[in-house]
Image (cartoon, rainbow over all chains, first blue to last red; front, side):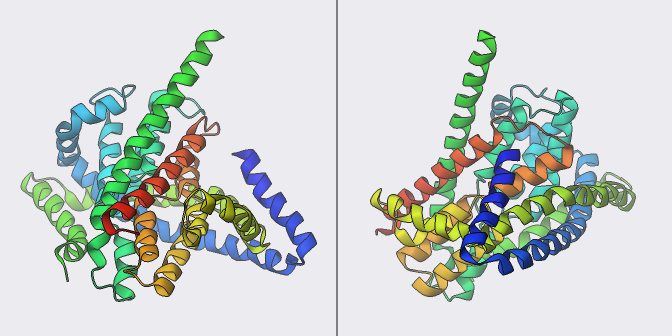
Length: 196
Length: 177
């Protein structure tokens, strides 16, 4: 990540030296810094709201009910997490939120899930479960693609929701693909460790 | 207004209703729980700020300098030879890096080609079935202080590639090219 981060900036600045876009780059640096602050501030409202609701749901036993429902599937996906660990509840609520197109609810729950997984691994390195979680998260299994539906309605589609089944199918395929890739990388890591 | 569009409006209020109704029935101190759980949100959001700011600056330099567009210009012919619609290539390349840029591109594609065209549908499905891998990685790992990401980036980006290929195949099969 360090390399990618630095290379994006270095590459951009060098490119700007030769193409005379330094003015835009200069502006973009401070504009994006502002954007980041605005984004973080707007995250406060989303985080406080959803973490508050989640806390109630957790106390009411709703998270546990969700975990019990999906147990066979989820415990196979995350074999390193004990079955009754709170991480499972957060992982599931994150996936559920993504599924129903509640992007802003997914983030706080995803962070809580990461926190719980960090308690389990207790190291600054990404654990196996974290990598699996991120893989399934970025492939985002979606039933209701909220933003896309809004854009399609705005441009007066004859049928804004006609893409729902296609989106679901495509995201199921990429979900399965993500799990397979994650497993493959895990096997490669394990073999390497064994050799050492 | 179709069923799903209505459902997307109803879902959050109904979720709140269900959670509060069950918690109240169980005689839990709902308001205190809400405040208690929400408290954490403030520090969490602020703790993500440096990660977010660093990542957004680096990406914005790449975009503003024109280097990203040049890179896309180089890659587009290669990918369109492989059978990928040329109009969709920039969106596919930007999707994992920048959420706002990708949404802008999707909106523009839908506006110029029409929401019910092949490109419009493909852009919709692509936008809906993939996520901004860089953002997810930055926020999630940043919030809990993970420094060594291991294979996470590679796995996430490969999953995006699969998502893009799956979108093209599925849209072609369901709607025809």
